[in-house]
Length: 411
Image (cartoon, rainbow, N blue to C red; front, side):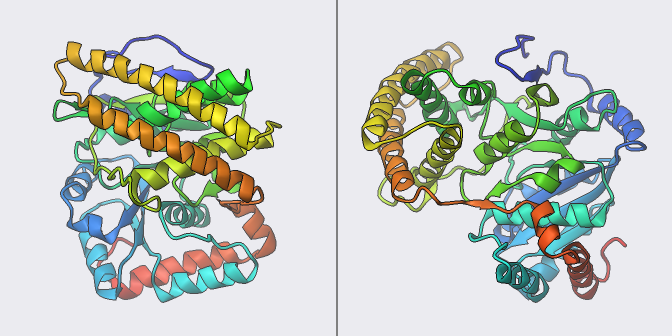
């Protein structure tokens, strides 16, 4: 049972009474007349072979209010793309699968590259960016939600609660972030949020002083949640990071473009579990090691744009403050776990903090060595300004792929 406490400077929409999903869906069916809704699912082909996606598709097949579902498919050859079209054909909604590795989408990418507008890294950021471009090109929705394809505990009320704040015509929200308790199998998860992001924000407040941006980030109960929703118009001017800083980058963009009273967060699940990244202490290019570095750099870059001056000495001070605060948080989380009867491995928690402290320094050094690094993919409004017919070409490429390789897919 959630509480009704409002923390920070954005609105929190709680789950206070376990309202039946059928009631939410009835309201969403009425909202769709004014604000038709889409869902974006970024997916690796390997997730079609995993345990989570089959249940997600089965749950989404029962969702009546979605106008469109757009699936971005990465790391798939032709046979795998054909299989994906068949796999998602069970969905009754208007479904399109973007074959991001196919020749037509590669041609779009090459055209963007010639203008210096193409994503520079493969990954979720690029996948989401192309999906959002197709949502704009198809022009079928006024609101759009996004969630991952590896959620093991998925129920259809997750997407209902996630999209409700931006679909309800009586609300003025342009953006909504999902949150939940990362507890599964009697264990507290969410290490990067618990042990990196929150302690780092508190350390930056101590070292750098008061900051509206840090207060804003600190208002989100789960800033790294991969579930969020927008009014579709938001996508035009949204710059999406291509690295692991995606979630923090999106939050930064929303703060840059909108007043905080147009932003909210909503409780979308009692329990939430998905595939877990390895800590990867011996390889800074993988797992939580790379994630923690990218996230730290994303925060440092944003503070720099707000006028904060960084140096090696300041980063050492930030690292020291972070380390002390994070260790105090471990004590807090351990006590929280004990009273709730959860297992808690203090040794592994402290190992994670030690790694994150190293990566804060690594991120700081990288920022100082390359202050002009711009991991953001250009906004679609900039792309359209440079290539006016790109939306029509993108829509044609997606339609041609779906028609040629999957004749049975929904028209």
